[in-house]
Each structure stands twice: as structure tokens, then as C-alpha cells.
Amino acid sequence: MKVLSVVGARPQLVKLAPIAAAFAGTPHDHVIVHTGQHYDADLSDVFFSGLNIPDPDVHLGVGSGSHGVQTGAVLAAMDKVLEQERPDWVLVYGDTNSTLAGALSAVKLHYRVAHLEAGLRSFNRRMPEEHNRVMTDHAADLLLAPTEEAMRHLASEGLASRSVLVGDVMVDVCLRIRDAVLAGEHPLPELPEGIDPEAPYLVSTLHRAENTDDPERLAGLLDSLAELPVPVALLAHPRLNARAESYGLKLSRGNLHVGRPLPYAGLVAAVLRSAGVVTDSGGLQKEAFLLGRACTTLRPETEWVETLEDRWNQLVPDPRSLDRDAWTETATRPAPDSERGEPYGDGQAARRVVQVLADQN
Ligand code: UD1
Image 1 (spheres, rainbow, N blue to C red):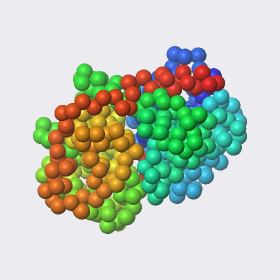
Image 2: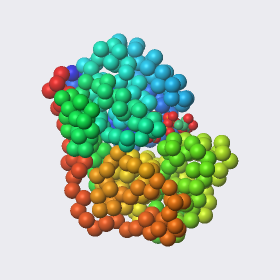
Image 3: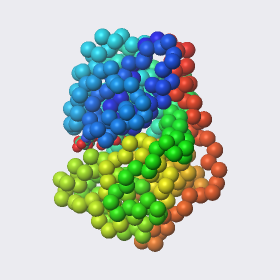
Image 4: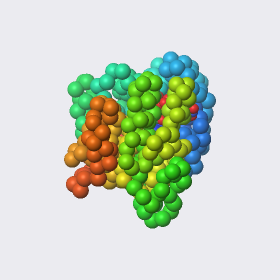
């Protein structure tokens, strides 16, 4: 069997790591196509080297652009790749523009598509990720769902017969790296200037278009983080830097300390050492949950609803609508002491993905 993985953005590289490892040592052929959606070393190269992912076989080099330009560039470039490689399966990951373009290019040329992380829904039609995941699910032949909740969404959209619950591959990678960090294999990375690793701090990221692309909203979020009584380490995505610069907003202010994005093991080490997480990232919400830290999510909804149990994760659509005490209590609350169970699976999802692809080949 030949499987062609299409990846392009940072969270897809994290998910690719356990899949590539699961293919290694099998007789199957696994081809990696990097679209080039993310090209900064901090968002791409360090994930290949840090997570021992083989170098991409093909690099499309599409780079940044508007949704249409970026999606279209991947679509146009994929025809030649698919005709050369002739895979049995095209495997697409998550909900980025690279996901949708990879799925669409394969469907058009009659290659079978499997969607990893199928069935997630925010029901927010303003989010580019929601368009991408809904359209990818309906185009794909095989839907590899991470959770029971995702399976329910797929069933309610008439897609049950194509859906298989495999668990979440992010558990595979997160727990493996957590264990390596706890075993002392990955030292705590350099944190932003002003953060004392020996004292309590919060880890924060902000990159969703709905938070970064409105200057007033972004300024309000930055001020809210800056006024917290605990120092906040903001690991700034290039999108955040680019938008802040174009609005003339300075990211560092008050108790908000800005640094670069971290490699995966560095992030896990930083979260494990932290007092909690404040983010709009889907992946980081789950990593906080898996690593046992309270998370505050700066969005009106989450696709990972299981994290909301017992307040492991709390949604704050707009911190400015809370009074200062309520905002501080929320963002700095300690982790609950409740059991979390295994809503995202047992850390063997990638092995199951390879098996399901082979069985249905
Ligand atoms: C993309 C995904 C988002 C995912 C995120 C993870 C879409 C629609 N969005 O968002 O779902 O959560 O990746 O990080 O696919 N830029 C750089 N260097 C890079 C990449 C981006 O400077 O290597 C800057 C550019 O200014 C670019 C902007 O970030 O215009 C946005 O990049 P883009 O790939 O369009 O989306 P992300 O915000 O990264």
C-alpha cells in the first residue's frame, strides 16, 4: 500500500510525527508532501528535526497568500504529484487550507482520500477552519475520527458509514514527549525575557484570525493578558507578529512577555513547568488537558468539548466582558484535581490509522 500524506502547517507536522513513525517498519510506502504553507523554521523545520520526521519527499513551496491564492496554489501543484506517485490513499490532516486543497486535488483525480481528525465542529461559520473541515469531511472516502463526539457529528451529517473512531494521534505524540521531558531528555527551553522559570507563569498563544485580524479585539486581548498578576509567556506566531506590526501594536506590555514559538518538546516542557495556559489554539487546549494544566480558551466555542469537563478548560469569548477579578480568577485558577479519563484515546491512534487504511485498501 502506498499512502501519500499532505501536510503544510505546524499542527499537521505534530500529527504527522506519530503517523510517520507508525509507517516505519511496515511494508507500506509512506510519501510526505509538504505544501509549504508554513515555511518559517520555527513553524516547520524544527518539527521535522525535533520529532524525527523523515524529510518531505516533495515540497510544493506555496507560501502565504489569501485563502483563494494559497488553496489554489496547492491544488494546482498537486496534480503532477498525484500522477507521479499514484498513491492508494491520500491522507490529509486537520483543518487548514492545505487540508482542503489536498483532499480536493485527490478527489478530482479519483484518488481515495482519508481525513485524519475528521468530525470536529465549532459550528462557527466565520472560521476558515470550519469551512475546511466540513468540506474535507464531505469530500473524503474515509473519516478517521478522534472522539465519540466527532463520530456523532459525522453521523448527524449522514457520514456514519465512512467513519471510524481511531482516537487522537496527538495523544500518541504528546504523551511520548511528556515522558521524555520527565525523564530529563529535553531541558526547559529559553523562555521569553522577563519570565522566571522558577516562579509561576502562564503559557499563552494567539493566532486565530478571529482574534488577530481585528485591531480593537487584538489590543483588548493583549491588554487583558498584560494586566494578569502572573507573568504571561506569549509564544508569538508569525501571523500575530505580522498583524500587530501592521496595526502599530506593541505585543510586550505589562506582565506580557513575548518570545518565539517553541519546538514541540520545548512547548511540552514549558507547559509542564507552567501554572496554566491561555490560548486560542486547538492543539494547545488539548496539550494542557493531557499534561494536567488548566486552560483558558479565548474563543466563544471549542471543538474539543471534552476538555471543558470539571473546568479543565474554560471558554472566555472576551476577557473585557469580565470584571478584573473574575478574569484573574479564571486565567490563574489552579488545575482541577479530578480524573480526566481518556476521551482522546490511549496513545495508539496512529497504529490504528495504518491498520484501517490497510484493511480498507
Ligand atoms: C494556519 C491554519 C490554522 C492553524 C494554523 C497553525 C488555515 C486557514 N489556517 O493558520 O487553522 O491553526 O495554521 O499555525 O489554514 N506566516 C509567516 N511564516 C510562516 C507562515 C505564516 O510569516 O511560515 C505569516 C504570514 O504573515 C501569513 C500569516 O502568517 O500571511 C498567516 O499564515 P497562514 O498559513 O495563512 O495561516 P495561519 O495563521 O498560520
